[in-house]
Structure formats: C-alpha cells, structure tokens
Amino acid sequence: MENILVLVHTNEGGILPRAALETVAAARALGGEITIAVFGEGASASIGSIAVDGDAFAVPRYSTDAAAAEALVRHSGATLVLAPNTSRMARCLPGVAARLNGAVDSHAVAVARDGEAVTVTRWFYRQRIEGSLSREARPWFILLEPGACEPAEAAPAAAVETLAVDAPSRTTHEGYVSPETGEQTIRPDARLLFVAGAGWTKKQPDGAIHTDEAADLILGFVRSAQSSLGSSKSLVDQSGEGQAVLPFLTHLHQVGQTGSTPRHRKGLATCCHGEEPHVVGWRFINDRRAVNLDPNCGWARGKADVLYVGDSFEVMRELNRLLAE
Image (cartoon, rainbow, N blue to C red; front, side):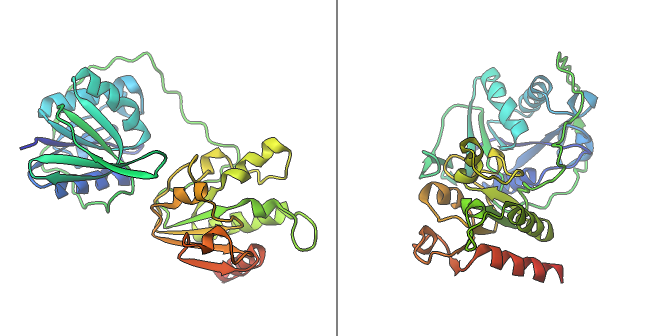
C-alpha cells in the first residue's frame, strides 16, 4: 500500500490556491489514508497535519521551497507525493525528486489506482495524444494540472506538527513588479474564456480598421463578465509584421498548440476561424461557442458546440449593452 502525501503551498496572506484543494480531492479518490503537508506563509494554520512555516518560506524561492519540500517528504516517509502543478511546485520538485533518488511527472490530468498500481494520465505531443503511465521508482512525485478535478472541502487540521528547517538562501526577495496597465485579463479560475482572433484588426465592411473600438468592446466585455482573455497566435504575432494590434494582448494570452491549454467551463471565440492549431488549446473547455461571419469556418465543422453567424462587432456591442443593464 502506498504511503500518500499531498504536498501543497500557501500563497501570499496564507491563502491556499484552488489547485491545492483539487490535489487533495485527487488523492482522496485513490483511497486509503493520506497525509497533507503544507509549506509557506501561515502553513501551520492551514489544512496540513505537518507544516514548514516561517518568514524564510513566505515567498517563492527554489532554495527554501526545495528544502521545505524535502524535509516534509522525508519526515512523512511518503512513497507517492501528489502536488499541484503550480509554477512554484514545478520549479522546485524535480530537484527534490533528484535529492531523494525518486522520479517526477508533471502536467498530470488524472491519477487512478489499478489494483496495487497507480497510473497517471497526461497529454503528449502538444495535447494531441493522451497516454497513461506508471513507475516503480519511489518516491514518485506527481504534479497535477490545475483544473483537472473539482476541489475538495478541507478544514484546518486539529493538530499540526511544525518542522524546523534550516534553509539559508543567497536569493533576496525585493517585491513584485506589476504591468504598467494594471489590467488583470488572465483569470485561470474564471468560468468563461473569451478569445479574440485576428479579424478584430482587419478591415471591416466600411473598408476601415477599427482597432480602438475593438479594444473597447473586448475589454468592456472582459471587465463586465469577469472572464479570462485569450488570443490566437496570428493576433499576437501581428506586431512583428507591422500590422495593427491590440496593445493589451501578449504571448501570455496565446491559446492553442503553441500557447496555453485553459480549463474553463465555457469558451467564446470571436473573429477567429477555428483552425486546428488554435482549437487544440480548447480541448478541456466544456462548452465551446464562436462568432464568425463565415458559416463554413472551422468552428462549424464539429469544433464548436454553437456557432453564431454574425459580425463580432455587432454581437459584442449588444452583449456589452445587456451586461450594462
């Protein structure tokens, strides 16, 4: 029987990320007893029965995070370690696995028990091939992709064992630098993903380009609906080609084969044609809808649940009007 450890971290203010509770749910689905370990700010008051707390572990740093994770895994004697695939965990756990002569697999989308064996499901070849694997090496670290399952309900532990860890670091955390715009348009936990295609910056029926109006319509909808914003590759690459661009879109917004693979409940694509490299990034969107003037575009060929044949400018004007009421 595997000795299962759920290893999570807190964010600023001692708050657990949603992905941490999703990892707890995945571990509970395996059956058997699990141990929850937490490190970071306010860890000793969190859901874990063992914790590493203190000012040195309040901010993400490889040296301190790796030391905390190593101490928690060694103390628990875990053979199977489940952790959320956050940037903080993805940075430090491969090094921890090497220190403990174990193995690590990232971007897992499911974990299951097959008899006595544990199997991990993940995507390969840019999300085109789904495969399952198992390992004999122990401890085995599995980083679960955020959004892979529903989060569990978890209360603070009744008794917490806080470990003392000496983790000197030559790295100094001086603070965070935010974008000058101050506009938060990437929201991984939003229910809706709104994707803008290259058509927004092309000539419209009157023969002119309306980039400023396009920007107002897109940002107006994102703010009102509190949705997350994405973009097709062609749109974020247009700046290098000397074409009109929407200044608030970057490669971080890019969704598709060469971008991110979001996991929102609903998705709405506008002014994009549903090409395969872009649509592959929508694989985990439950309800896919699109707005396009072309009734024969890629979205109409089995890639969208609903296609609205119409002008995106007109559709978004009406949507923004309804949201403002």
